[in-house]
Length: 262
Image (cartoon, rainbow, N blue to C red; front, side):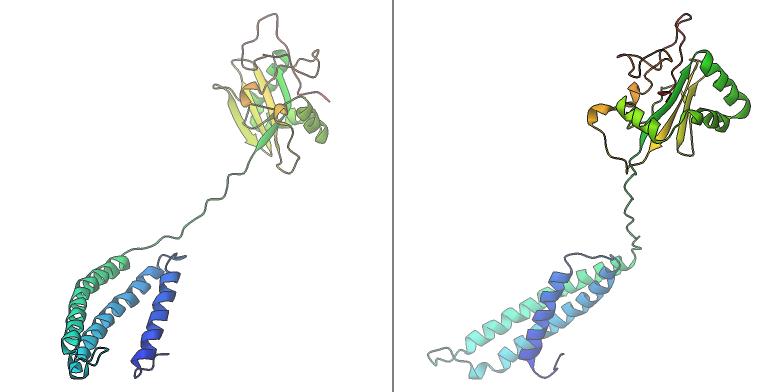
């Protein structure tokens, strides 16, 4: 607490307060607090000028009892200190004006609350089923007549839960990006994504894979461009290398692939 009568004690307290302020102003959790701090600092600069003026006057008033160590009168030294203090006080006038203008400008600012964006949830997808040719035509007709929800409900019959997920990991049909070509249509609902292309004659369904499931080896996860492996009902579980889901099917090579019919 300030004594208002003991300049030594009050100077020590003021110094300690400034030390605390210098530490506290290294960061502001709420930028709006800067306006209030500037108001206090602005007033403090004015008071500091008053202190320097008073110290200058005190040196001049007591110059007749000023001595240096060898008892030689030091009136000139006291006056020199008074002059330096007076100039320092005058120099604070510009500081006070600038701080005051900064305080006024800060008062015109409406600080918006910082919003920390939530990290985007990582999503992965497992293949459920892929059909092309005549088998796809039936589903494409269903989508055309009853809508994409009906198509998802129909293809979801090939989803056997953990068994389908396990087969997808084994066969490398876990995708970091949705498997879809440039001209494909996609629709997401209930954790599934339906991808279909009436012109190319194929339709596929993938299911979102929760992050809580252990991560497979990197070689088991393929890029989206390799998503649809073109496994046929007669093919072994592993798709032939280089099969392109998005390539048009020849007239005599139409096939279907049910996402690891389990």
